[in-house]
Amino acid sequence: MDNTEITIKLTSDEALVLSDWLERVQMTDLSRLVDEPAAWAPIHRLAGTLNKALPGIFAADYAERLEAARRRLREAMGSFAGEQDG
Image (cartoon, rainbow, N blue to C red; front, side, top):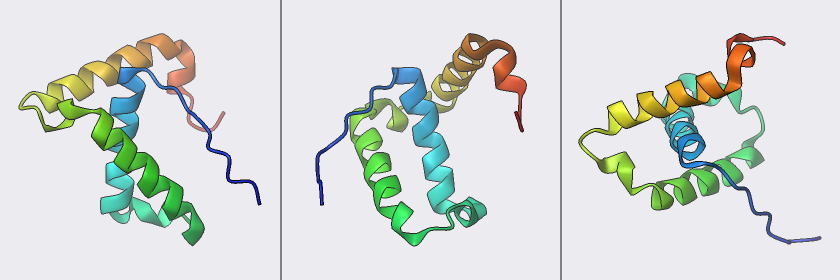
């Protein structure tokens, strides 16, 4: 079995938005989306890595930072951001 590590690069906006989404997946009923128990290992690892890399998640203005990041990502994606089912 190959245990080579893979590096994923994200912008700070992508990391912030993904971190928030992963938190909601782990802490709410959204966990029903994860139908494979083994998927939780990389989900938890990714969430933990993001939390360590994003000290701003504990800032008083976190909600504003998150919404600004979401807005910038939506704008960058253009019309693709509005597509739900392809």
